[in-house]
Image (cartoon, rainbow, N blue to C red; front, top):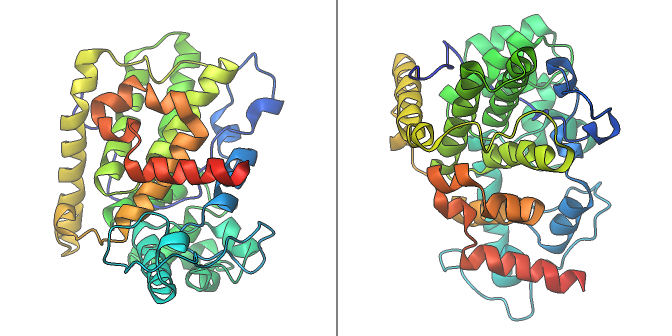
Length: 348
């Protein structure tokens, strides 16, 4: 199998597009690549995702325009410091530390590129919205000028605007990954790999080597994201797994690679990281593994992993691919269990 198949000169960020809303489409065929890119994954999680977000406050405060019920800012018995071992910010931290955690989480979101253009347009007062707003209405040519200077906000908009063609979006996503983004960028690249795998599968009506290649790429993105404390790519991958099981669409990404091929994902991921570091060196950036992951990443990671377990349950717990590349992600840590338990009590 070839070393690693993606990553060209650039890598970028984009809104995650998947076919999660394809339930209303005829089930006799796979969605096309064009159809895959017309659906924003942010609108696909449904009531379960809404319930989790309403029941457990992530470190971010809810946007002013949100209609979701707001959890209380602090718990009567809260009093932990941000430097303590904590899990749920709004129920465990003292008020000042809760505010500090919010600010650190916003900074971490910027580092990861966790900014959705569609959400910013709908919620102009949302955290970090001000970073994308100046770019939202720029022309394609102006965005590309900024993108050539590694302007990550221009790249984020470029990768998410409806009037930008797929090739420019993909180049932007790849460029963003080189710059250190792991959220929208990796998720978009997984969607592109899946759409190309579907086309190859449809054409051959079989799991041919090209399908395996794209699935290997997807899993390398997932593994890399998890090593950088960002489960965004994992969530996107699990959407495809669940969709296959629920609607029997196309191939099952869980069964494409045999055991030997799965063991190669580690080397695929390392080659991907080596490629990133090579591109980063040309920009006089330090190797990605030397970029510090802040302490706030741990509770943010636990929350998002709880989100994944809440949405995908048994599919994640019993995922043979994730068990191979990052077994800890299939398990529920004490913090993840605490978050899920809190949700369960809230929903009674």
